[in-house]
Length: 95
Image (tube, rainbow, N blue to C red; front, side, top):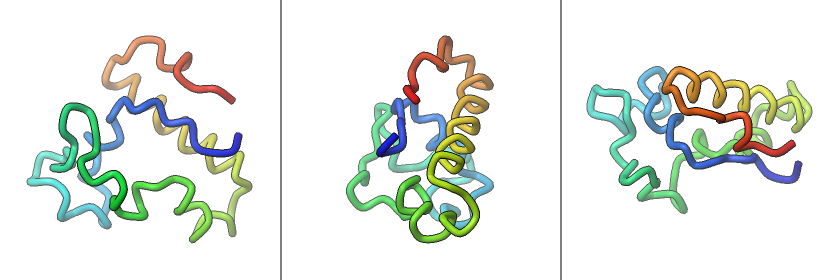
């Protein structure tokens, strides 16, 4: 895997309430104010915390291999998608 296999479901952007680095990105509802029509309006300039690969390189490479870090993030995606009742979310990722 050379880059994180995001399927663009938007669930991570709908669940930012407990991410300190994103406290200014929602208006109390936990949904990023830059998520419009399931797309990030500031994608090219989004915060580092929203970039799996950047966060791995900056911080998490000290604790995990890239594959381990991706798998942790994919599991978090699965949990968010399951809670949102997104059907067949497992099929949206490739390993």
